[in-house]
Each structure stands twice: as structure tokens, then as C-alpha cells.
Length: 351
Ligand SMILES: [Zn+2]
Image 1 (cartoon, rainbow, N blue to C red):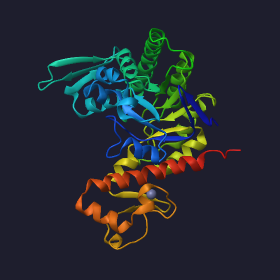
Image 2: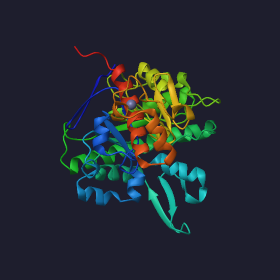
Image 3: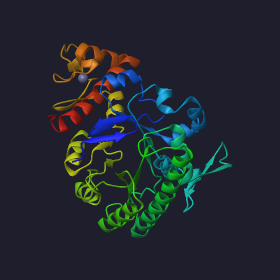
Image 4: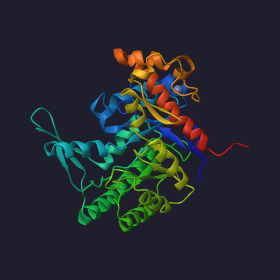
């Protein structure tokens, strides 16, 4: 099992959980709070940061880490999944072609923008991220065999173009093996093992610093298809990181770690926090319930987060009821610490 990740000036113990800082902020938290809750890294979204404030402004400022004044690892998503989700919601937003993602923006969708693998890598360099993700063609949940094949073929073709652009950028910037960011490929193939194997083999030939578990991974009842996740892990070598993109229920993190995945990100802990769903060792509690009105206990007896060290469930119940922004902060700190404690427990004991 891979136990350490070394990138640029970072040396991080694995596994890690990276919350979403989509627009350059983990909603309602300061970078100092992230560090206090031992959040080793965050994932920002290339597409959203491109829309606002724009990657050129971020580059002028010296990168997203400097803008956020955050000292942990910065992973940037390619932005492909967000654009794909837009298309799913409303086909008027654009379409996917072999060249890239064609989007139509503006009030009357009159402004055509082509978002390519090359653009995505250039933007990620402008952000100055530590781990960059190749633009991939996400396999839709209802994909048939033909669409799965197309998704794998495009993902591989785009990964090749991403790698070429990545090397060009490294050369232009005078980056060496020690100072360059890392680039990860994403394995698609839906729930089809042969397609995943084909995708992984072709990506391995191109050669990446790590490999992402991508695409649709869920059974009909909405649970994670663990057989496919384990199979996907078996396709890449143990000495390179495996990144479970966007998969991160607490129980799943532990199972995926045992399969060999060591990097996780998921919207759940921060989103659940804002909805008053707070984690503890028995599962979770809904803080809006009347039973917590006078409860003096912390959210979790075993948690050392800033919230649990100081505040009662009764106070958090009150803050939730009045809708104060302090609630979001306290709740998010707690749920993130739940995940960082989980990662700490999974790490092999240090000698
Ligand atoms: Zn706590």
C-alpha cells in the first residue's frame, strides 16, 4: 500500500480526504480552519474558477494556493464533469465532440466556447495546482455498449492530448521532476470490466503519475458497486496513487482504502454539515431534533475538532434553528474532522 505522496514541496501521509473547494473556498470555512481540522488537501474546480474570477487573474496573483493562503495540497478537477452535468440538465448548454466540449453561454446561448483537453491543462497550470486531472468523457449512467466504447476511446484520446500539453507546459516553465505538478489519468468504462481494462491499459501506455476511478459506479439500488471498484484498482500498479474521484461515504472510504485507493474527495461531509446531518461513531445525528435542545454533550465524545472541544449539541441546535452562519462553520469543521480522523486511523502506524 502506498503510504506517502511527494509532490513539489508537499510530503503527505496517505490516505487523504480532500473536501470540495469548488470556487476556491470550502464553503463557510477559512483556510486556517481547514488546517486546524487537519485537512491535507482540497479539490478546486477548473471550470468554475475559469468562469469566476478567471484563471488568468489567479495566475497573475500567483496561483490558487496563494489566493486562498492555503498550505495543503491543491488538486484541480478538469472541469469536464461539471460541463457534462450542465449538458445533461439542458442540452442547449452544448455538446460533447471528439475535439472537446462545445458550450454555449450568454443569455441567448449565442456565445460558443470550445473547452478542450489542451485548454483544461493550460487552465490547471494557471491555477498552479499540485495534482491535475485529465479531461475525460464521463460515461452517462444509462450508457449502452456503444456509448461506453465511445467514452473509453475519447477518454484515451483526450488523455494523450493532455499529456502532450502537460509536457509542453513543464518544458516552457522550466519545471523538473522535482518541481513539476503531477498529472492523473481517469479510467472510464462504466460497469463493464472489459471496457475498464481496455481504458486502463491504454492510459498506462501513455503513463501518468496516478490513476482516477471515474465514471458510473453505482448499482441499481444506488449503492456503490464494490466489485467494479476493486477490479478497477487491480488494473493499475500499487506504487502509483489511486484516486477515487467523488466517492466518499465514510463506510466506502474505508472499503476503498482496503482495495488500494488512497485519495478521496466528496461533497457529502460539507453538504451534510450545512443540512444539519452531523457524523459520530454511531452514524450520524440530525441536530434539528428536539431531543438536542438541552443536550450538554459534544457532537461526538471522541472528536477533537474545534466544535466538539467547546460547544454543546444544545448550542448547535439553537444556531441551526436560527440559521446563523456560525452553525455552518462549526458543523463543517466537525464533519471534516470526522473524515480526517478516519484517514488518520487508516494510516499504517509509524515506527
Ligand atoms: Zn467534532
